[in-house]
Image (cartoon, rainbow, N blue to C red; front, side, top):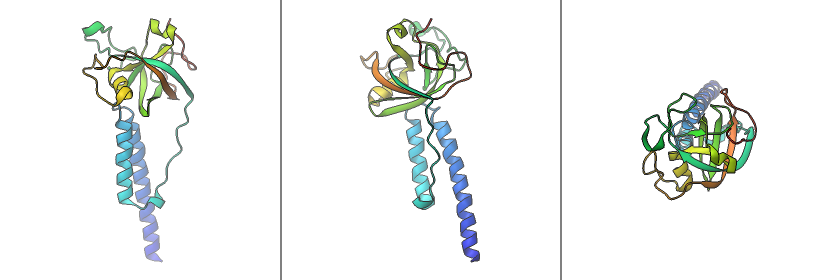
Length: 193
C-alpha cells in the first residue's frame, strides 16, 4: 500500500515536470526558425517515451486558430544593412530573424502558423508588407528562410536569396494563433495603404 502511494506521487511529479518542459519547448520552438517546432516536439516525444509509459502521457488542448485562410506569399529580408534594396529595420522594432513575417494589415506581434505542401513554420508578424503586391492578393511576406523551407525543405542561398527561381508561393495556408498587441487590424488581411 505504501509503495503504491509513493509510485503515484512519483508519477504525478514526473508528469507535471514533463508537461512543463513540453510547454516550454513548444513555446521556444516557434521562435527559433523553420523546422524548430517539429524538432522540439519530436525530441520531447522521444524523451517522454523513455521516461514513462505511453498510457500516462497526456496531451494538452490544441491551440484553436482565431483566423484561417490561404494566400499567395512572397519573401523578404530587411535588417537595416542597406544591402540588396534593404529598406530598414522591421516595423515591430524586433531584429530581422527567421520566423518574422510581414503583413499589410494584421497587428504587429500576431502569432501565425504558415503551411505549404506538408511543411509548416510558426512565426510572428514583425513588419509591414508586401506593398503593392498586396493589391494583387499577395498578403504575406515571409522571411527568406521560412519561404525556402516551405518551398522544398531546403535552406536559402543567403538571407537575401532563396536560391530558387520561385518568387511567390500560391496557396499558402495561414492560421492566426493569437492576435498581437501592436498596431494593425484584426480580421481578414487587407492590402497595404
